[in-house]
Length: 317
Figure 1 (cartoon, rainbow, N blue to C red):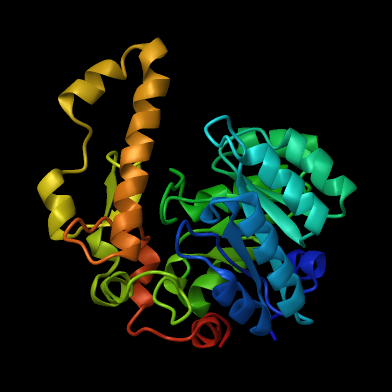
Figure 2 (tube, rainbow, N blue to C red):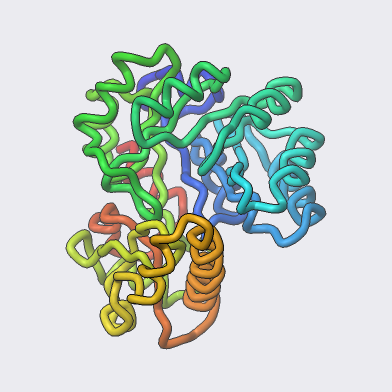
C-alpha cells in the first residue's frame, strides 16, 4: 500500500491513483479490475449511448465494488453534450463515489452531486479555473498538464502542480505524464495528492478497443505522439500513424477561414467534432486503415498488453 494522501482519504482507496476516464476505452471490466487493485477508476458517461445503458453500468459497478476501491463517472458539462442533464440525473439517482467534470462550468453538477452524497473533481488547466471551481465547492481539482493524453493542458506539471497547491485549499490531483512508479512519486513530491492515469491502461486486457490499438501503444513511444487539430477542433494528442501523417495535423484552409468568424466558429467546431469522433470510433473498435488512435506520451512505459492489475503493480511497486 502506498502512503495515505488526501485522495486516498476522500475515496477510501488503497493507492492515490485514479484510472482516468477514456472515450471508448474505459468500460465496466476495466473499472472493476481497477477497484480490485485498490485504486479509483472513472468512465465517461458518453461511453453509453442511452441513459438506461448508463444506469445499468452504474448498478453493475456498485455490485462489483470492493473495499479499497472506488468508481466515478466523467461528465462533459458544456452545451455540446446534449445528454448532460439526463446523465447527471441518472448518476445522482443511482449513486457513485465521485464525478469528474470537463469542458464547462461544474456549478449545477456540484450542487446536485453533493445533495446525493457524491464528490466532484474538476478538470483544470490553470489557476484561474481552479480557483473558480474551488469557489463553487469542488472537492478537488485535476490538474491537466502538458503531457496528458487527448485534450491536454499547456503547462508542465513542475509548474502547474506547485502553483495550484500554493493557491488552492482543496486537493490537487495531477493528470498526465505518469507511466511508472517513479512518475507517481514525482507528482506526489510536487505536492499532488494523487494522480490520474489514462494512456497506460489502453493496452490492458480489459480495455474495450481493438488489439491493433492496444498493440500500437506497445510499439509506439513518447516520441510518436503528436498534436492534431483534426479531431475536435481543439488540439488533441494522437499516435503519429502513417494515416495521421497522410492527412496532416492542421485544420484545412477552408476550416481555418471559417473559424475566423465568431458566428460560424461554433458550428464549424461541432462538425469537426462529429467527424473526428467518428474517426476515433472507427479506429478504436474496427479494423480500418484510418488509424486515429488517441494516446499520451506515457505509453513510453508500455511494453506489452497486460491485465489492469499488472499495470497498477507497475505504478505502485
